[in-house]
Image (cartoon, rainbow, N blue to C red; front, top):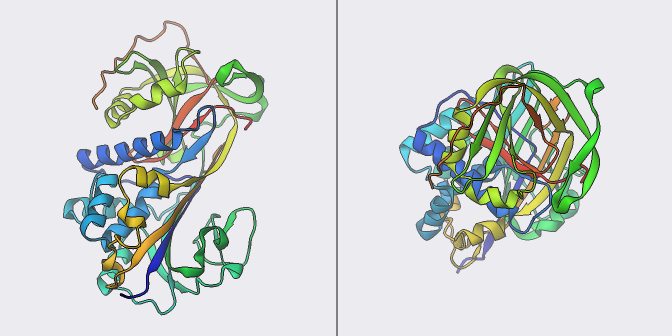
Length: 401
């Protein structure tokens, strides 16, 4: 038996949108379901805490692994994603979307990339190399992964690469035991843009925010009176929410805020009922409304062990040195994924951002100018309008954390 090799799957994310190609409705729903499933898994055990996670930052390397996965390993990956890149229609649709993600406008800086760092001398299947080279600005880079003391993966803007810089933004290889790694997949997504209508810093003030368990804190709250897309809805069990869309300049993306109407309703009562159909219903039935908008400034950074999340979904062979079948990567047996780490960061300020069918009923509008005041825990998701991709999703429980 050849020596066992392992792949380290290392995911970094800031925040990201953009794209102009419409996806087939079925694929869009599958991508959204993946995003919400990931959100619910990340939310489990994190009651009362802030978090952000990038579904696209997780799905992109899994798609690349599909090119090399065979047998039961490939089936488990397809089951987790809800689709397979071996389906020509899926592959062509995703490739068309990813091809539009390389350009930045004067108002938006963004990048989507996946770099495969390959241990120097490791053979790779020509077919795998060709497929990866056509996928979402992906590239291959030979590197000596046996030198953890001189190698770190950066989550800063630009292409990810080994470096000796161990700034706070970097994650050293020691924590992922890279000394025996043969290949590392690094998915990097960055996004920085300004609001279509900026919040004025002179209108920001300290206002009360009621956290979980009734604790009240004074937090920096931004304010503006403006026209937004807004709707009031209820889910299949009757929880009422207000949904607000805040677009970025150039309509490259929008930040959607989901705020429980009942101040005493925990987010944990609403999150289990979020589905792709619910999100589609909400985002397509918002109405242009002039509103007073209050939104706290917040910054979230966290890290997730994707290995435990994916394993709970039934993706187990990928991490088993005896069962993993990634023979399509190099033609060799014994390659498996040892670690899967995802790091995410999101910051919202006055200027912008650096980073089952449910029965939903549209409620009547108020006769007076309504107020959207995010002064209690809320859910957010960053969505690209033309594709419907949910690129970031998370929760704010306390803006000061």
